[in-house]
Length: 356
Image 1 (tube, rainbow, N blue to C red):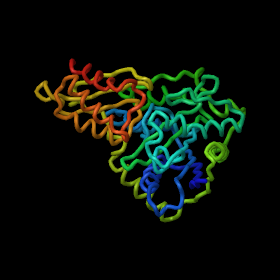
Image 2: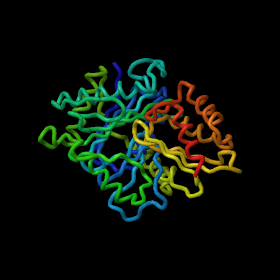
Image 3: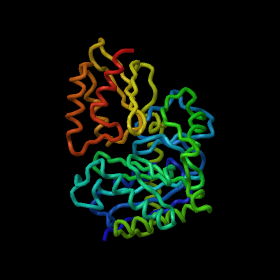
Image 4: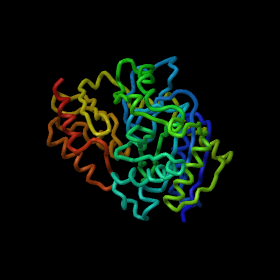
């Protein structure tokens, strides 16, 4: 039986939460660790717009808004977070860790289907008949209750994330977008109130973060024959988290890593399974890609996207050359991009933007 550290944080600042994910991704593969990984249940105060790893943000960033921008490690859609929502983050040495010692035993498209099962079991234990229809939403009677996503870092460590609507539902998304992005830079599917739900609505009572944590603990222990060992951060760990948070928030670098830039004067957008795929790029002599940024609602390992954007620089701006680079990168077993449909969607989207 594998044992994971289990951390419950009823109130944690978003920047510290992000730093903890970074810390545990960094240490999870170390041989000196006694635990197989870490699971964390947490709530952040305030109104947060939680962006996926690859969303482009407005330039300049909003000032004085009641809604704060937050960027997850994982990809996927922009969703509301903060007051009324509960986060779950599980960090493991690799994407197949609960199933095999072979990191590639699970194909990328299987990861969410497997790891969401603990969440579904936990919800069933409190008599919420939840269902995972695929892609990234967990639903109850076809109404959205939670979003799941994941990230794999360059060392291969897995972060599986869930955002659960506890006392508020995801239909507050349009209001949050209006607050921080009046120009519509952040593309998002509108979530209608009648298509959303939350635990308070389903259970006719309010659950605390600790209640949700107990539900998740029981669900994951039952599904995966795990043992969660309650863990309080040591003073040394807390200092490390503070240092990481200070580094990542310096100059809002984490949020600004994908920011709208006027010099990338070619833009194209494609509707895809999870929302949109965007390409922002500039050309050199109208024949080569000078620089490119891919953005949108997709889920991918960060190493693949960084390599793709790097290798597309000075690539001939024509379909075959672009597709050859994308195909070569995603032929590697460690690389993946989900939520866009066929891989050629990347090339098709870029080529669509060649004509302004």
